Image 1 (cartoon, helix red, strand yellow):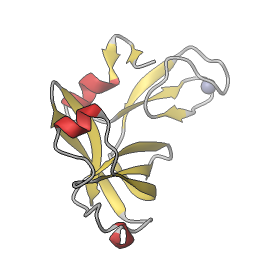
Image 2 (cartoon, protein in one colour):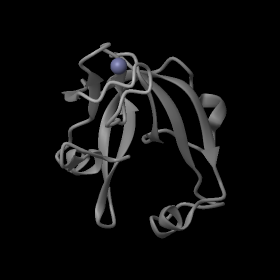
Image 3 (tube, helix red, strand yellow):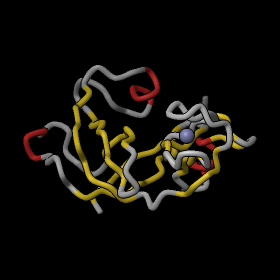
Image 4 (cartoon, helix red, strand yellow):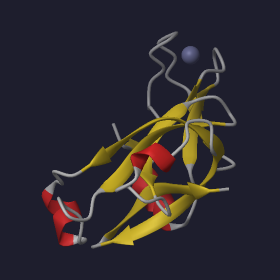
Amino acid sequence: MREFNGTSFYEYLGESKLMGSRCESCGTLYVPPRPLCPSCYGETLAWEEMSGRGRLVAFTTVHIAPTAMIEAGYGRDNPYCVGIVELDEGPEISGQIVGVDATRPGDIRVGTPLRATYVKRGDGSFLGFESA
Ligand SMILES: [Zn+2]
């Protein structure tokens, strides 16, 4: 579910805000937000803005790009990097890692401090991360 309290996670990305939802019953934080808590089945969750800071815990480089990324100029000759980022607040989220050379994955380091960046592409905004 991407809709929560009538506003979507992606609309917030368009405002350069990385938002999660926190369960008011058990305190578990979800990014992207969830409308229901899978931990305690609580139905009362509140938006919470993330700092956008975290560190890289895993990554891959993508050479066989989906259509939207091909349209953005990526592909076999211009790969891009997608990573899992552990946010300072705890949750992990995936996003494009920008500002790294995806043709040289040996130079990309797990543990690198990152901050969220908001990539405009087509009609939407997408979550990315760049070196902090
Ligand atoms: Zn809960």
